[in-house]
Length: 96
Figure 1 (cartoon, rainbow, N blue to C red):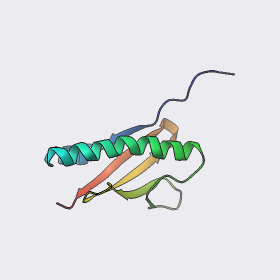
Figure 2 (cartoon, rainbow, N blue to C red):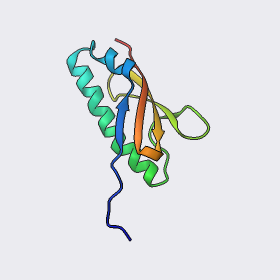
Figure 3 (cartoon, helix red, strand yellow):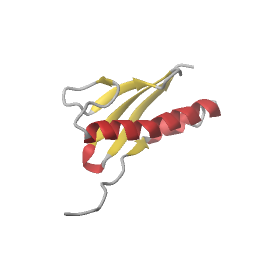
Figure 4 (tube, rainbow, N blue to C red):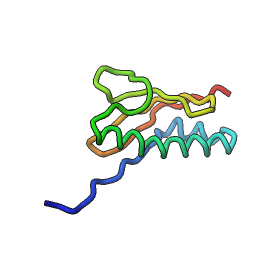
């Protein structure tokens, strides 16, 4: 039996939304990034426990979800990639 802990869940934002966020007001971009980091912990813990991660399912297999940043006009989609313990964010939209 190994005492080794599983690798932590991480979050990865695709290039286009990450570049777009550079043009946002700094406080909004910072809050969004903080939300993404917290999401990796929350969604990863849910997957590890066999529960559905937060957000609205966007597929039938439970790997893609949509969610809004709390209190902000920012919607995004994310994908759960359990094989590498990663949350990938391919789409971020700011309605500002």
